[in-house]
Amino acid sequence: AIVKARQGDTSALRDLFRRFRPPVEAYGARRGLAFRAGEVAQEVFKELARDGNLLKADSSKRRFRSLLFAVTWRVIEHHLVRENAPARESWVDSSPADAEVSIPKDDRDFGREWVTHLLKLSLARLARENPQQHDALRKFLLEGRSCAEISRMLGKPEKEVETCLNRAKDRLVQNIRDEVRGYSASRDEYQEELRYFSRFLPTT
Image 1 (cartoon, rainbow, N blue to C red):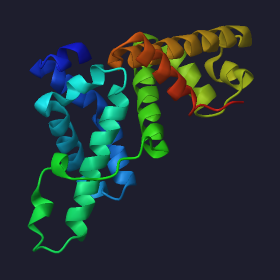
Image 2 (image 1 turned 90 degrees about the vertical axis):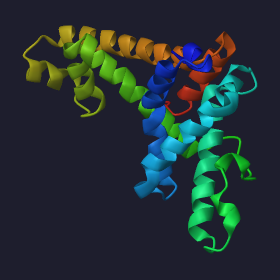
Image 3 (image 1 turned 30 degrees about the vertical axis):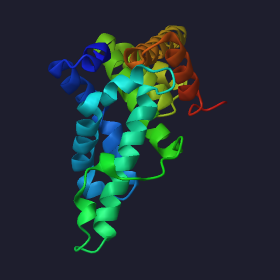
Image 4 (image 1 turned 90 degrees about the horizontal axis):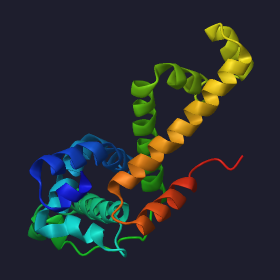
């Protein structure tokens, strides 16, 4: 879908924006714009789509996630300036693209929202593909249940639950890889994004 979006396909663009709107809105809320999060996301994707900005994500030096973060940061800063500047300052009505702001290379809060969103997408796909595996994994990961507890809850042998959990974890990892591959422009970007993703996972 992202390849078609870069080529200007309107349907693919809408699909892309709908898919990655949630982490942008969540980050906007983190930055103090909870009541304008939807407006922020709308502006971000409008900026991303105009003047071939999305094509910049094709470059090995500008990955899709980092490009999206940069545009999101600029739009949020523009909103914050407009809220704090006197009404007579006419320049605050300019486009976010025209604003000169210092954009950090990375932001861990944006990273957390990004990774959380990919996990949600991957879990939702697992739920559609195999509800039983999803249910067992949800109990294990989100509820902190042991294999023995899940075994009693589902009325199934513990060995069968262990096998189900292992398959669910493998499927979840594959779903995550598919999500990352879907927005990566190259193999290098794909590998780098997987490494980035792993930074937010527990080491124990």
